[in-house]
Image (cartoon, helix red, strand yellow):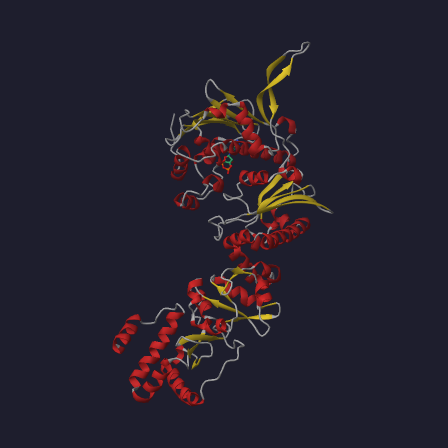
Length: 621
Ligand code: ADP
């Protein structure tokens, strides 16, 4: 018999499972039951769409049986089964998880629940079993195959006999030790408890031999008899009444479905009974999966038609800006035969999507208003997506999204909403001010913020690349326009420059502009500086932060902000400039260049020629 190697990544995953110190090993059963249920779903779905197949729901179930003597636990299903190739492909390799993602996850810190995130379901059996045997016969196939593995040293596949289609998985449990009790998984009560806890909502019967304490016939004596019983309630969670369900039920369902490795922040159970009837449960996760902001991430809700799964991720049910939402929708009014293309145009689906979107918005607003800390966590994870949403599609969704935004505030020293900003705004303040930069710390130290802060006005800090783009799209909030602290006209009246400096300044600035050429649009006195000598202001649509972002994009061309070099008339540097201008032209040119370079450094822009810059400073010294 030929022994086959696991594909490299599967092997790593297996090692991880075999040596796992994961505390909830019992979830292996949830994983195997969930696979079994999926396999029955597949047959059920086939039968519903193909009249030649008969499906009598009562014939389909999942059986669990424990053999204490041989220390084996067997899970049997009447599902679709697997062919030889499928056994090989599905159990020998991690196909879907994607090699890249998996590597990343393994390199990540503990805390990351790989099991939850990847749905590496089947392999979790190796957390409790030293040997796993899978015997399967695919629906419509006459031959059956057995796949056997004892872990990292590979697996074998051989032909075997099996009467009915379906899959049987036999786990030979590991020896119990001081630290770990594996024998408990042979115990009737433990098994019942695990099934109840994680798999109660599975829609097919999960049967098991259980001991019943019964009164004997024709006598008053009692005896213990073994009987096969269905141990799950079989009602899907979304069909249950909200008041029957606990937080734990919703959280368990979230992990059972592999919606995320985190705990959901919030959920909503919807029961819509109108022209179109459907049940839905939507979850707002607390943290973003690590592939969230990549192309690989697929959005969507699970879609069911009267309890039959039609699609794992139906993207039409979620707008891109709410792509982080997880959950399920089940409708009696959707046709089972609906195809992918039809879904995109389906009117009913559109109606559901609209309602769900409104619900998500309401839930988020509710979180923002009533559980602020949680909302801040949420925004930390997904705020960027909301801002992209505001910016994309030509700002079509800006009104829906603007109240969900949070920005760090200079005065509150924490994230605030635009509404809160507006409510606090003094009457004489004309604009909503913002400043951009890499971090809160850096923005705090920006010279351009001096005047606005001095006036006692609040500044919103934009630290995400997308922030300024999104705000430009929004343009205003509650009739107040947004203004960058580096932009034109801050709407703040300030005392004028001294008369005698005005004339002289004009002449000096003209010469500075001539020396700097196209690098600046203008040199002038600053109205926004208080203590700092110099800064840039910008004119026009493109700010310096936007210049930075746009220049990192391929094929962006050469995009530049129109920079204005501003000099503080009340700083002693202006006196120095004046005397250099009168007495020493060479020094004057040196000062001009250095002030320009300083303004660049303050903005976090690279110095065009660092060696030259160093030489200039040395010369001055
Ligand atoms: P997942 O369930 O997330 O796809 P698993 O590793 O648990 O990942 O399973 C891999 C694949 O193996 C499944 O997608 C399915 O195609 C197949 N499979 C697993 N268990 C069964 C089963 N009991 N019956 C039929 N196919 C199964």
